[in-house]
Image 1: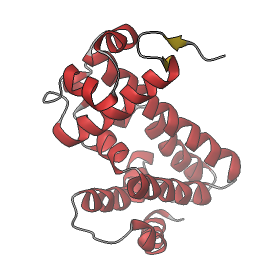
Image 2: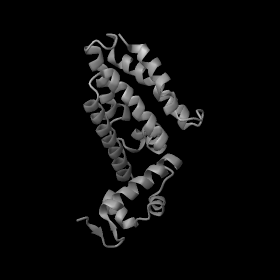
Image 3: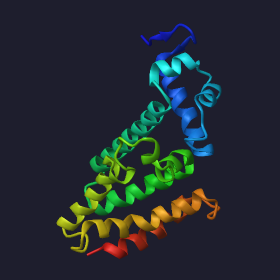
Length: 198
């Protein structure tokens, strides 16, 4: 049975999710430093007391948000690894995943790519060193080992393979690209794979 927070009458899980979701929107819209706990209280509909009880402070909220997004990406990449046997299939699925998140949850991608996490989460690893980004690189490394990709430095190969897609994501988030990135997936993939294929 879900535990209820008596003061707000929201399930404890509901408090956590509402605060995380509200914070994601606020941090991406107005920035971490321009967002106050009262802003989060107002946007989430949760009391100040329940927020401090669950998260301690604003940095705790940002850390929980960061960890939840990293965990979501980890699970998605684990699923890709189980579903697809080759590096080629896995890397294409990664680009498709990133494009889909950009289209359906742009705030998530903005927080991942735009937020300067080290400024407000100095104890966390840089996002590019987080487990999901390591996993993306491992897909490339496996492809080099298996002979699917040119035997070059795996960091160079990963940058070549994913770099164009990430640049298009930035352009989409900035409003330069007006149409869905999903429409460009096949062309992006052809160019990316040609740059690294053995």
